[in-house]
Image 1 (cartoon, rainbow, N blue to C red):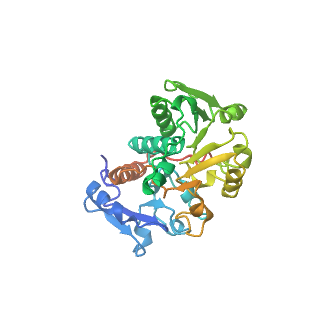
Image 2: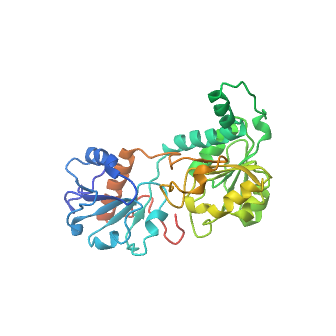
Image 3: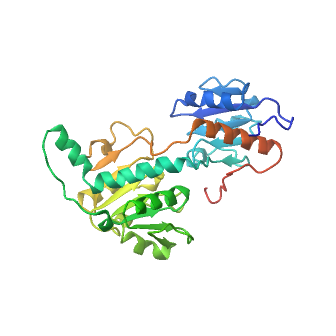
Length: 323
């Protein structure tokens, strides 16, 4: 792995780890392992801002990046970057990179398969029966009769589609443009013209889309109305994919039967939020999958080395497209 001072142009890298919502101390050991002697800045005491070369971010405080005059790289600690671009003062001339971690697919496959099965097989009812010491069966439907749709066929979406097909679910996927070489048992749809047909065959809909101007608010009342009545919604994409005000009315009307949500427009989800008290909504705290800390550290340092050497860093975001 390259380190940012390998070319002799920058000396010891100075990296700030920034978040307004998380304690980022858990990343410190990985950065120090990846580059012993690194100048690492965490928490509220960042020292001289004009010494910082790279910022690793998860919902960074707005305006802070603009106050770092020698900043060379902005690095998200995940695949999403909207938590960074929401800052109106973001220096948009700087390379902004996302993490790409093939290891994340295993965690996402496990979460999505669990989310599909726990609702399809009535597992929450079994948990309640077990706690009450009641031997009660729920209706049993074969996986082959429960159609799962995945909106978003990137690396994670494709992995989930393959895993669900492997355990017997009919799977369909939708993406902005056509995808080739779909896994066996996965039917493909693409573009606006095929969206309604895709939605009409989703007993469970899984959202794994990137967040762009076009997909912001994708999960709304109009979309819910195009799903089969009683569908289950799983959102493991971004919180802003969901129009939150439209979800409970769709549940009340029976158009949706349940929702499993792992991403929210505001995180942490406030204790007073109505989703917490709704038994039809299962909330998990953005834990569907996580990138290993050492992967974040190494990708950040490799990207900073690339920038210092005048090269385009890996996984740089096209801000015009949003991913």
